[in-house]
Length: 119
Image (cartoon, rainbow, N blue to C red; front, side, top):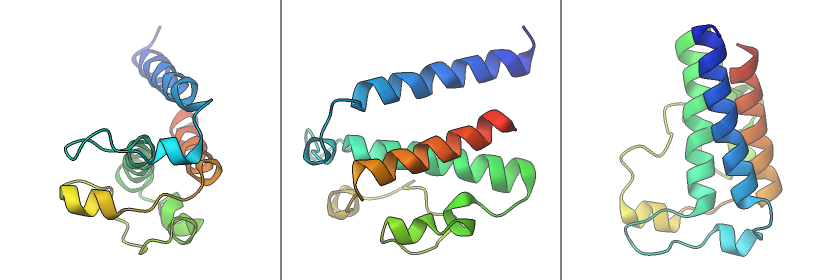
């Protein structure tokens, strides 16, 4: 298997593990932070999606991110800030973050991952 194939296989395993882990979890449970030093499942899925979207589109393709191009930021009720992926957020800011529905969250996750797989 090529390096590209190996990388894609590893990413797909990761994506499938995330989808499996949240498949039977309701919106309210997705938003629970286990403690003040942990992030919610919703926040983690959003963060993973943002990192993937930004890396593929901005770094590798030199194109606008899905976040901006497809106005995902509006669906998340967030500013368009294309650099914001949750890196360096304080515990307070993370606690205040409001997730959209699980359906919206997972749709963005799927689109970002599909873009990575297509690349």
